[in-house]
Image 1: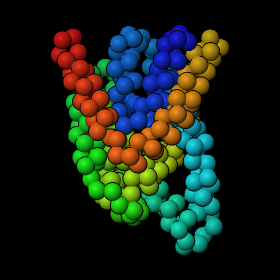
Image 2 (image 1 turned 120 degrees about the vertical axis):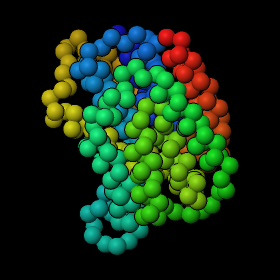
Image 3 (image 1 turned 30 degrees about the vertical axis):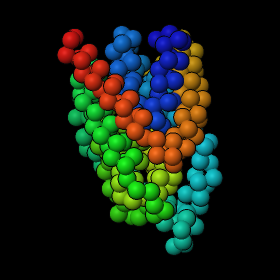
Length: 264
């Protein structure tokens, strides 16, 4: 993998991690189009680096909220900080459960399943359309909401289902305030990303040579910078009820992916 290709994939990861268009789906499509021939270990290493970059960009944008969550977990008082922290924890349970028990089954959905990606992008488009038409409220995320949103996040492990799109749409359809929905969606994934990175590092499957440093660094910075921009932009778009634009985009890309898969 050369530096230019790393930057392209880094930009795709950074933008699509926050914009509701499925980062995993777009990476699968990009690899198919670019003819990615990386061996599994190299591909896994690069994927881990990109996800780590977007997790860091989330922490930078929501640094105050991250500090509040950590305070809530360790101050042992039943206040709003603690409750919000526990809601984040509750939202993680479904994804952790699915990720640990069905890891091999999930991996089978990746690796060139373009037809699946296309179909899941159409589902993402439908979710975004429904959310865009929901009434805006000032409701906060409840514990039950957190679990339901967490189930959406677990389903979004499928390539083509946008994690941010699924979780934000679910939140809005549950009546949660749009800004709070976006904030909760982005914060709830950070512990999962760091947990996955730690798991992959401990597994021993992460290997790279000195020649990989430049492409990995290029991909990391591309994902980090584009992630900062996309996260900020997405919060403003959700607040203004502009999800329908992404629904149209997902529908077009989904249909194109299905067409590509059928013709090839």
